[in-house]
Amino acid sequence: MAEPRDSETVGNARSRPGGAPDARGMFGSFGGRFVPESLVAACATLEEAFLDAWADEGYRGELDSILRSYGGRPTPVTDCERVSDDLGVRVILKREDLAHTGSHKINNVVGQALLAKRMGKSRLIAETGAGQHGVATATAAAMFGMDCTVYMGEIDTRRQELNVFRMELLGAQVCPVSSGSQTLKDAVNEALRDWVASVEGTHYCIGSVMGPHPFPFIVRQLQSVIGEESRRQCRELLEGKDPDFVVACVGGGSNAAGTFAGFLDTSSRLIGVEAAGGAALTSGMPGVLHGMKSQILQDEFGQILEASSISAGLDYPGVGPEHAYLAEIGRADYVTAQDDEVLAAFEYLAKREGIIPALESAHAVAWVIREAGRLLPDGSTVLLTLSGRGDKDVAQVRDLMNATR
Ligand SMILES: *Cc1c(COP(=O)(O)O)cnc(C)c1O
Image (cartoon, rainbow, N blue to C red; front, top):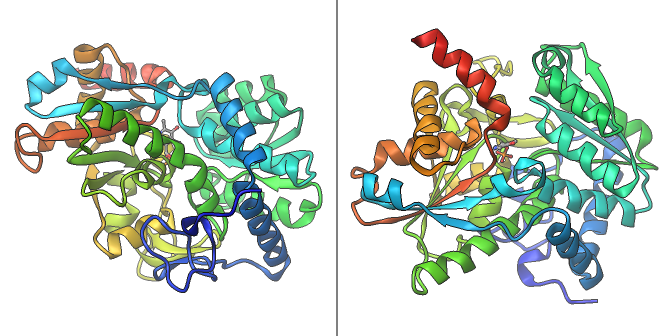
């Protein structure tokens, strides 16, 4: 068994960028484990199991092999000549849209399913908003021969019927959640409730770098494959240099955290782009939600606000605690994109490069288009993680475009 590298040892006196959270699961003043007594032991057991797995060449080797033969890794980077000519900055896309199921989510669910199997568990549960993480979890469960239950707000099950069908097709059971606002926030609560009662045989496969410790750490490590690959690929393209800017969209923050993980110790500037209508880092306040302390969209009484944007995948009122920490120490900057710029960016990338981005990823594209020649000096290099493909969004975009014409 390999020794864990320092950056992967939980319990450092103090967290530092790129490292593990401290012994309480804190990244600076964010993170932690704010859960009922009944889940403390489950989280501690999971933490131990993950550290053991992550240090084990057997686990890491099997994960790499599945991601290669099944997940489509490594994903390529694309040097976008037409966009670069047009904007005056060199834009390199990290193509997570080419991964199996069409986004980076496969990296996380395969890693967690493999961990669950190693822990002797035969059932996965998950929360989902737009349905993408639910579909990814159902995919991993099918591939590993595990049972799968997905909690989804009742309103979301109606908005995303096709994804409900996809999950059922993959053999998962979808449980509509009718409490609260009947959306993602309530689905997480319901999944946590299930986990309390079923923890013996069930793993909660959380969908982003959120929730109680160790989930934000586990998901970041599993998504760090994006950053590690990108760093190598960029150095090949840029004659040994790192990109000047590294940009990714932020919902819960997993594709951004995984991308940033490869560049925290470089001089690349890190930029996370939130949806203007779901900007927990830009407009939120510190608070506790879903077992973690982070920046949360809330009113003056601490009531959680509904996030809302053009892309359902960014509609989460919180954000992963590591991002709150990176913002706090100034290592990463967080900005927003508006729905109309995002729509324009969606169409722009399709027409210029023949790549239809997910609406989530189009937020990052929108920021680059807006800031080219401003915050992004002429001739600078930008790595942009294209978190997913836009096939799922074309019908919605068609309707939005028709409505504004
Ligand atoms: C789910 C999703 C996101 C948002 O999740 P993060 O955890 O912030 O990465 C972004 N892009 C795509 C394509 C997604 O499916």
